[in-house]
Image (cartoon, rainbow, N blue to C red; front, top):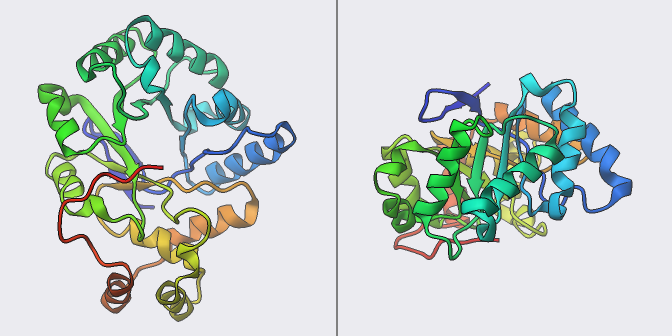
Length: 276
């Protein structure tokens, strides 16, 4: 199984599990937790969640999924920008820990940039590490200039989670190379796009047909083809989980990549960082 090395030397699976939209309906929570547990069985032991997802509901689903299996899991959660400083950060973190039913979060991210200065957020994250509440901190939806603003603290940042898929390749122009030069992993959210339009693309479907796989598997394999990228698709049923797991074995040829580049051209200039 492909692993990605974090700056502190910790290795995590390149293919993890996302939880956006989980926990929104109480009737679905058991099924969602079961899907996450199956993902653990299949080796997708990195689980990403956030206090924003269903206003804590997704964290509660994760708690159910990892009960009795905490040692297997690399747990990622995210703090709202308006909670990312001072007492508010401490309180938000405590709420997440309570919902997740854990003592420590392995990686705690700033969800996106808000009005609280980055330096204040970093200071709060470092206090949380010293208190044993988180093991490491990182960011999400931050571009190159934001990362540069971190200054020396960038060396302690463990990851930058951003939108990255065939339809959203803007980070390849500058952010992805910037992170790779510094050994900073990128976490790709929505790696198979939103709403299914990406998966209906003719070129993507043609590549999938050549390999006897689904378009979603090709889209996932594409995000995993380069170094330093962790992909976190969401899946809430067994068939989807197994499909995602099998994408780890798919190797795209030069002809496959050329066909996808023609359909989804890589960026030739700086683009604003795309977000969902």
